Length: 267
Picture (cartoon, rainbow, N blue to C red):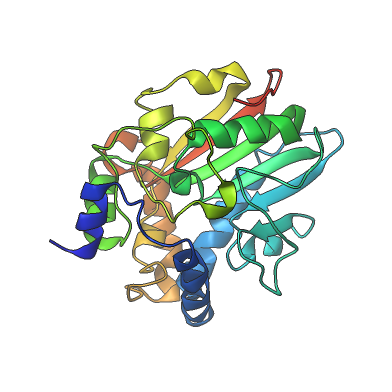
């Protein structure tokens, strides 16, 4: 059994959080040498930018910014991560944000949702800081037929497919001591299969899009080899748009947009 399968079987909760910071620095080298990866991310960022709250006061804050590449598309976005890095604007923990009540217009989670071991606890904190009418934009793995195959076979993080979704953190939970956690199927299970509907207390679903992205998958991501030259990016992206018409079979990515509607009290 591989390391990732062992983590999936055990729930993935025993890896130290410092693993995340190490991955960020490893990813930097891949980002610099792979034009297809950079192009795929720009496309993703442009897509999610179209779903930001259309007006009103408040900042746009990204959690788990990693390399901070979203600024190429949204230069006004405040970038953050759980570890400080010189290229990021601030340090933030999803379970205990430093923002004042209602100070955020848009909260962006790009490949962050599946790292939330207690999504309900995080959403309660998001409801505190996001103003009424503000949005949480989630971009995460999708579990179509091919998505399950690709993420299980080629991604080092577990799917967490058969693990129960633990909605709220236990009593005495300390956000600063939360371990590294990953369950790539989380967004699909909650927002497509509907395994939990408690999120509707403070949020409405403003948009849900399931997207095919062989342009990203064949870029090799941050760990695999790039499988096509930049000249083929256009045709591959055109094929992605066509295959996105069959999301149950070909979707690899899911875009979820939640709009703030409730009282925002903590769980």
